[in-house]
Length: 117
View 1: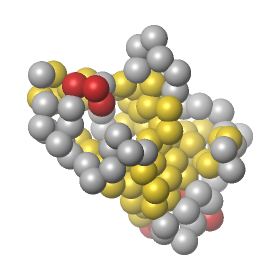
View 2: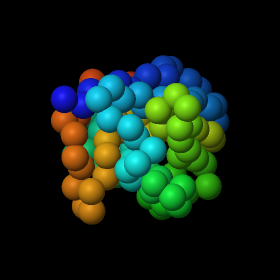
View 3: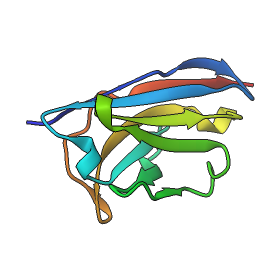
View 4: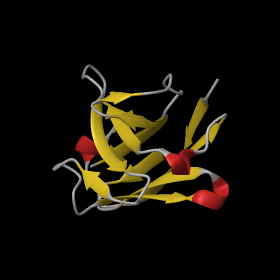
């Protein structure tokens, strides 16, 4: 059974940066498209970014130019570098394997990002 573990969240001021990490046990992430998602209180979970097995990236318009998704095969880890953070980026962030418009694995615990104004 694949377990996803997100980390790196925290409290940061508006304009600050954070780097999130997604590690997996039971799966080799480099073989698959991986995505980051977020869920703010009272809102549905939304897609943030995807990186394909070939390294192609895609981003939601709300984070384009500020966030960067990447992967490190040697550590079986996917990252989300978040710059120029805004209060509206406040949410719990999750990673998962992307399959079309769906995800493949059970959701992990996520990591909380809080951006103060």
